[in-house]
Image 1 (tube, rainbow, N blue to C red):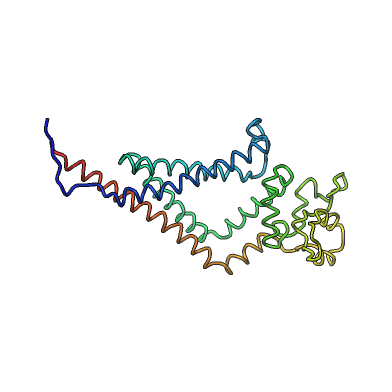
Image 2 (image 1 turned 135 degrees about the vertical axis):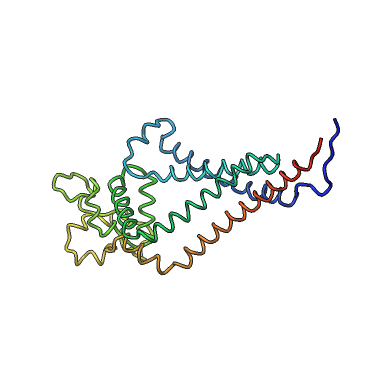
Length: 270
C-alpha cells in the first residue's frame, strides 16, 4: 500500500511547543496546589480520618485548593500530552473545558452584577456560617483572621456577629474564657507591641460601646468589602481581563493545532 501527503500540509512546531509550554505551567501549578492541599489535610489528620470532612460545618479552604489544583492538573496534562502526541481528542477536551470555564466566568460576572443584593446576602450568610465554625478548623480560622486584619473589620456586619460562635457568645451559660469577646484579628494593632496579643479581644463586648472604637475594629467585613471594591475596581477588572486573555490564548493555540492536525490527516491519500 502506498500513500503520500501534500508538502504544504504540516503541523506547526511553533504552535505545538508553544501550547506544550503553556500547559506545562498549568500542570506544574496543579501539582503544587495538590501537594499543598494534601499536605494541609495530612497535618490536620483528614487523610487518616476522612470522616472529619463530614463533621466540619464551615468552609474548608483546603477543599478549594484541591479543587483548583485538580482542574489545573487534568487540563495541563491533557494539553501537554495532546500537544506532544498530536492527539485531537485530548486537545478538544482541553479546548472545550477552557471554553466552558470562560463562559461560566462571564455568566457568574453578569449575574453578580445584575443581582447584587442577592449576592450580598449570600456572602453575608456564608460569612456568618463560617463564624460559627471558627474554632473547628485551623485553616478556616486563619482565613477569617487574615480577612479581618487585611480589611480592618470584625464580624459580618459588626462585632456582635461573634455571638454566633459558641466560644465568643455572651450567654451566661458559656464557660469559655473568650466569652463576650472577639478574635485577636479584630483588635486595632498597637505599633509599640512587637508580639501579637492574642487575648486583646477578651471581654470587649461586655464593655461600653464607647470603648470599642479604641480597642477593636467596629466595621463589619461585608461593608468593608463593599467599600474596597469601588476603590480597586480597575485592579479587579485588570485581573479578570488578564485571566480571560490567557484563556483565549490557550483556546486559540489549541484550535490552531487541531486544525493543523486535521489538515495533515486529510492530506494523506492511500
